[in-house]
Amino acid sequence: MRKNIVAGNWKMNKRFDEALELVNDLMERLEKENELNAMVVLCPPYPYLEMCSDMSQESYFAVGAQDVSEQESGAYTGEVSASMLESLGLDYCIVGHSERRAYHHETNAVVEKKVKQLLANNICPIVCCGELLPEREAEKQFDVVKEQITESLFSLSAEEFGNIVIAYEPVWAIGTGKTATPQQAQEMHAFIRSLIAEKYGNEVAENTSILYGGSCNAKNAEELFANKDVDGGLIGGASLKAEDFMKIVTSFK
Ligand code: PEP
Image (tube, rainbow, N blue to C red; front, side):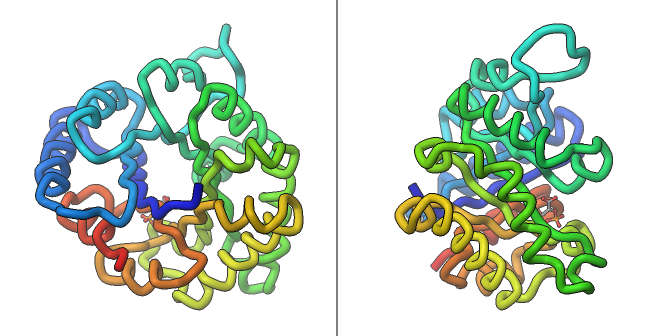
């Protein structure tokens, strides 16, 4: 079901005591909100997932991992399976982030396998897509995103597709302070929704949450989220400070 979501991707930041402090701070702030118009998801590093999952029982946020293994189980040193994440009570997991694509050679085929592992374990994948700067400069952004979505997601059934979230993250906007304009975001989100409609029909497309990511912050979130096809954000840097993150979470009017 389509819902507004603000997910914080902490990436490889914060020691345990700092992570605990951030979650406590967020919990206090969430407690004070009368009404939230968005679902809040925290995606901390693996070692803090259990702590966050336990704390989420007392609060208004859900917890997600930042990655998952494409394998089910076995001799894969250093990997973490979807079933392990499920056993911690996690609801979400980011897949196909551009940093994993760039530094860990994650292809669309790998993303597809990870998505299937997560769905088999009842975890909602937040699937990232987005073009590089030279691709945007060459006006190839729609081709690139179409290929990513088609190759990584279109082998799913319509029912499975109903359980995923997409995050459009233009790579040139991630961690750079350069944000896509609200028009650029809306245009791409509408395009992604049209691809889903073509493949699975309007109902599935209308029910899919599509998040924007890329230097989204306390100042620009409201303008970005006001677009009809932007259902929230995947937030990196600005999710590391409770005050900033909460401003983003409360940006939905
Ligand atoms: C991200 O890495 O998903 C992201 C959107 O980062 P930032 O908000 O820092 O650009």
